Image (cartoon, rainbow, N blue to C red; front, side, top):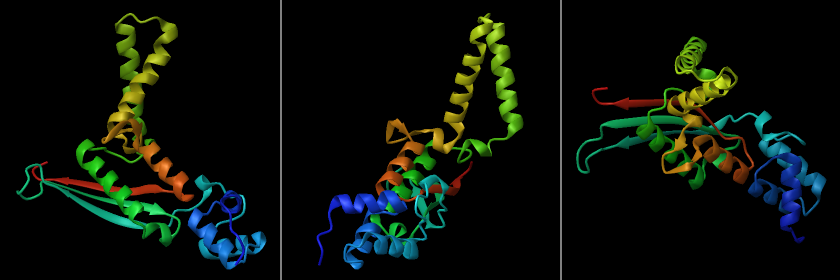
Length: 204
């Protein structure tokens, strides 16, 4: 059996965009032959040479349910369902992926995001927020040359409150939910995406 080094795995991962374990397994099965290993990765994961992670399709994944009981010992009052996607069932079956889904569901339960990303925010609502922020800045006598900057700051705060990916992660507010996903994406070598979410609360 040939010696498979970390550098070999890294090279194949950079070339294919596949996960580290997929690359290592392919190199072992290909007896260290890089070209053959690349073919195996493409056959097994659908990865294309030179593909960027952001351009690939995350068609595997899990639907995760989370229940929250504000008072221990009493029935849950909040429930969340989230669909978290990746590229391969290998990643989807992993404990780390399930833990990520649970972390995101817990965040949704606590922070109540209205939408997943900025593209889902109604254009009319954005226009209204922009117009309101501009008027407020002028009414307060702010210099004209800084009004655009003020408005962008107000919109950023608006997105941070309502958009899941823009929200500071509830268990570590030094990073956003988007950064949490990006970190897992870099580790796994696969595209990771939240595609659907639903939050339920008794009496809400």
